Length: 237
Image 1 (tube, helix red, strand yellow):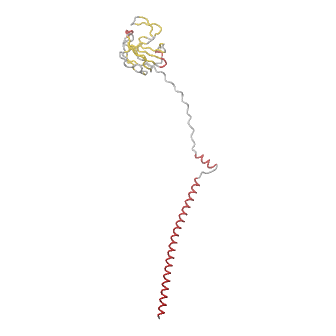
Image 2 (image 1 turned 120 degrees about the vertical axis):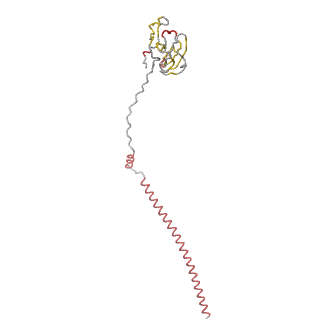
Image 3 (image 1 turned 45 degrees about the horizontal axis):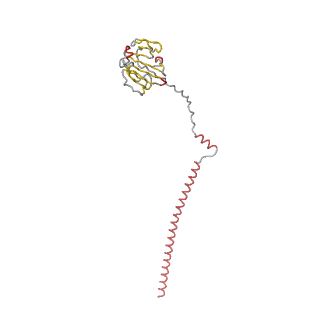
């Protein structure tokens, strides 16, 4: 009977040992299965990523090929067709040469000519009671009436003496020189001043003693290169 019980105990321990080995084998198998599933997930993800990269690369190559310039005559013709056609430039007639502005002369004083221009034939001087040439114009005016520069120029001289009173001389282009005598004042311009035609340079006076009998007037002379000029023959505004 003891032998029978011992045999039963041995069988029980062998079964328990078998169950332990089976349990250990099952645990190992479970761990292997879990590792295989993990590796399978990694490789599956990697395969999916490679697939996406391949599809993207194919799409990019296809796009680049479609954007590449064509070769041959057809592409050149297409490129020429895309160049805009420029309209011909309008014909412009040449501008005529600029016409120089005419020299502007203005009367230094508007008034009656009391003594005309007579450089060769003598005229009677009421003040001096004698015959004499007169290379100037004596123009009547009112006391203090404005006297103007006859042309653009530069004030060259001004002075006062017993015979001609207050005198201003202006030099102009082309060798012209104008003289204004018998003025009321010399204070309106100075030597070296630039003046324009029609600019006020003085006023009518009675300071020319040698022409006192003519009353209030301007004694006006014009010369060019030392030769007297008849101002009335110029194109005067």
